Image 1 (cartoon, rainbow, N blue to C red):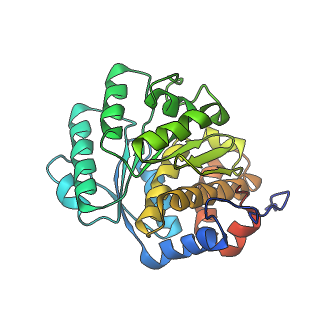
Image 2 (image 1 turned 30 degrees about the vertical axis):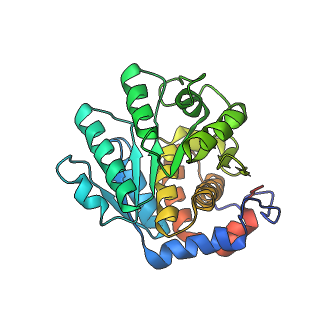
Length: 280
């Protein structure tokens, strides 16, 4: 049996330029342009993120080889770099892709998975931050670790709530020039000045591997469709949160949630996003 999510909510009070046009219109733009999103991501989530990108109308590519990443960047509308399953050859591919994207004016997203947990991982994440990603998307522990203060989550899981990292994220965004997103029970997006919050999603989403990585991939799709970084990030996180919320209401557990989430990403439209998106 399918259930409507409750309560009905609206994003009418949205900030940081997140109007109906930036939410539903942004999704329509993704579907109209089908941006090619070049992902250097981890083994665990490749299938999940590729399917999510396809479901919203983007075109995924999983290209990791050092020998071709620089050339492939020039075909992409956006690049997403996810450090989940690191090795030195992959780290070198990430560095090359980031530099090629910056040189070509291609927006790119950094997902610093488990930054702060090991010295190797932290050093690579910091090196990539120095290459000026367009957007950095992580959980609170990852953002705190990258910003040089607290941090160090439990593996890929955060040990801090997203609100704890908000002030740090604002300073970090101002210092790096990147839009910074903290995802958690409430998601926050900041460019160092403005802050948007997104209160969508469902607790069951934490029981499906790779949905944080999926959030980063969707940010790449909205960037690739031409949205500005803060608007693209907020629209992407709202898209995933609303789809997850609706999917959870239809699911018996995490297994069916994973399937239902793809269906809901595919079915989302301007009306659904603006009806249920809760953005401030």
